[in-house]
Figure (cartoon, rainbow, N blue to C red):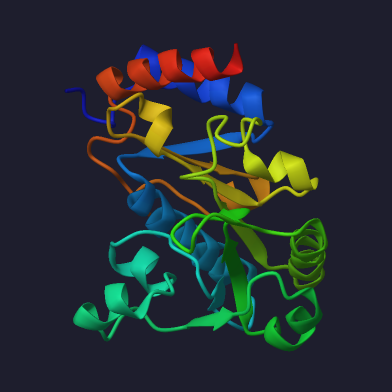
Amino acid sequence: HCSNLFANDPALELARELTEATGFPRVFFCNSGTEGMDAALKFARARARALGMPGRGIVAFKGGFHGRTGFALSATYNPAYREPFEPLIPGVRFADYNDAASLDGVLDRDVCAVVVECVQGEAGAVPGTRDFLQALRARTSALGAVLVIDEVQTGMGRTDKLLAQEHFDVRGDIVVMSKALGAGLPIAAVLMTEDVARALVPGMHGCTFGGNAVCAAAARWSLAQVRR
């Protein structure tokens, strides 16, 4: 193991290859999809604070699943997963998936981020509609809020594109990849825009084993197979 206070070649090369493949300029490595989602939601609130936005609210969707750690679970809808651990992290509200008409009423100035899956997995493989996802992108942009797209289950070619969002001509401000990325070893990548990355400073968030050389090497191999 090499502490992440030091660089290692596999992680640097993986970062370069991921940014090249996806067009996102920045990436943060951690160990699992749920850890990546926790990081993404933290980064969204850090950006809101840095920009002096009025609210820190997060909108997630009914039927959505984002993980089982504290913040990711707070944005996961299934009551059976949530109830044993309540109270969870506050400030998360749930809206109807694929209901574009309701977005104006749900998304207001209190919202700093929206988290969504392009295809809901735990809810039974429910694809988002183009109209809904494009309306969601437009509304979050208009509010200056961050769109977090959870590609933990749908990324790495599982929908015939590297990222499922490519099918809908939408693009998140933060995207989380994991699961198949590591070819069986634990790794997640939190991809983000420069706008999000500017809010982060050294020491604000960390991950002891994120981007370690062994898992990064496995992810490089896995990414190369999917891209090929």
